[in-house]
Image 1: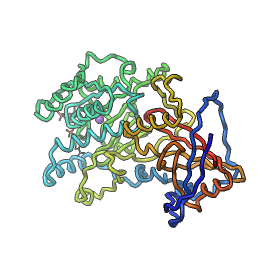
Image 2 (image 1 turned 120 degrees about the vertical axis):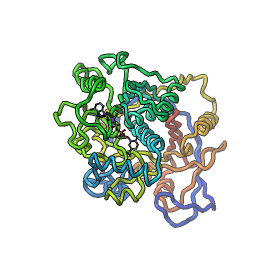
Image 3 (image 1 turned 90 degrees about the vertical axis):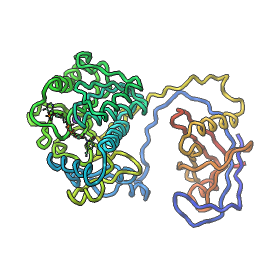
Image 4 (image 1 turned 180 degrees about the horizontal axis):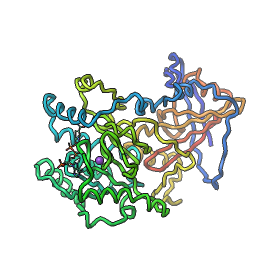
Length: 432
Ligand SMILES: NC(=O)C1=CN([C@@H]2O[C@H](COP(=O)(O)OP(=O)(O)OC[C@H]3O[C@@H](n4cnc5c(N)ncnc54)[C@H](OP(=O)(O)O)[C@@H]3O)[C@@H](O)[C@H]2O)[C@H](O)CC1
Ligand SMILES: [K+]
């Protein structure tokens, strides 16, 4: 293992500290062969209070989620809720004076439902989706969502017992049939939905629901309510995702008798309806990113900002997660000893090319770990700027913490992690 710590005349800005431009160190590190060891469990404790300004940024005001999540999580208290009548009026205004067509809005609504599902329930774990679609536009949202979910890698099934003969709906059905998405009649559905499906999309009724559910939707709603019996029987039940309104709930009062369906996710469209205040499941999202300011002003709507180009935004706080239960199942092709390149640099190039071909974001990002003379390690992400027979190259300025630490202790470690390929490439360096 050999490494070179050199100096370059190149000028570079520190990405993290935004420090003024200064002469840069030019580091090279030679790869070492990674020898897998039996895995150990390490417990890390903080040795001192954390003075990092970066951490203060993430913990903004009490009760608010800061940092990266701030744009995608909204405090429920500041959001407007619509009455049934207002919801219908907004719909009419959008499709009347504001020039939208129902097809457009339904497409955007269904896409929002599919993207909200994908935010929380990944197809690797929750693959089989049953969309139960009602006779109105809520059902249409479910048909559109099923199509997008198919393209996102899920396996959708559709139950659409009361078909509407308008061209919009028959077109949506044809689109699903062309993808060979199975349509199941109510009789074909098993008593216990938990065996065959991972996600149940409840697209039976939206804001025009009134009275008590009529057949066959009464039985379908019961099937969703009965799921919790299977939960008690220790089987993992499918999750219920309700589109706009949990079907069977009063649009304004919510689950009046307390014996209605209890969705795990609610995707409100345009703006949440009053019943959404009674939603106590873990995932409340808003979709339908098409509300023009004129509508927002007229109805004094306070709506959350959608993050970036997302079609959905989470409302309220995400559920508390037990970190120890977070676990991905990594399924990778076999990697045998005879497939490993003799030269670790060749192995790196091969894997780097794979990461580029897979279109991964910043495949040249690597964690650099250094220690100063005090022996306390620090890690940060830096970008690889080159690789050749002498090793890996990146830049930093003289005044950075890593430059100071490397001048005190020339040993350092690099780690590339390519999520999506389930691969990591560790290497280490030292001053020559
Ligand atoms: N601007 C938006 O936010 C958009 C919302 N979209 C979605 O559209 C629904 C509202 O759609 P709408 O067609 O007005 O109504 P529903 O889907 O709720 O359903 C109406 C049908 O349901 C029948 N119905 C009503 N009550 C019952 C009942 N108790 N039992 C059985 N059937 C019932 C009703 O039949 P009626 O004979 O009673 O009239 C209708 O057939 C909204 O919630 C969003 O999901 C758009 O997709 C995009 C724009
Ligand atoms: K619904």
